Length: 143
Image (tube, rainbow, N blue to C red; front, side, top):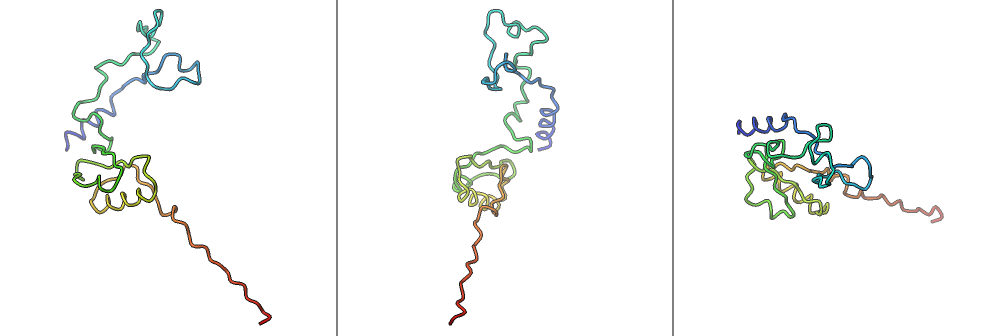
């Protein structure tokens, strides 16, 4: 586990440039996702120094920790409490899918706590439960 933590530290300290899409600052509708410049006269494609670098194999993270969460756990996406069976709490952590509702999310979080699994995107569901409203009864003074 020490070797993994060291590699994760190396990955986070690695000076990787922000690979920016060409023309991103010009148009609002362009998403901030990498697209390879393909224009014939594109200075970024021709790798002019001030125009931003292209992704290359040398920028990758070490293979042993590629895709891992910064906490050192391997992420496992979970959709139901049954998906928690067979997970190793020392190596794996749980990320609850975004399409899961609050009721099932609460079940998954409770079951993960029992199994000793870390939930990476846990929510505080105590506020989600509706509070009982006190109903005041009218008292007739005439009677």
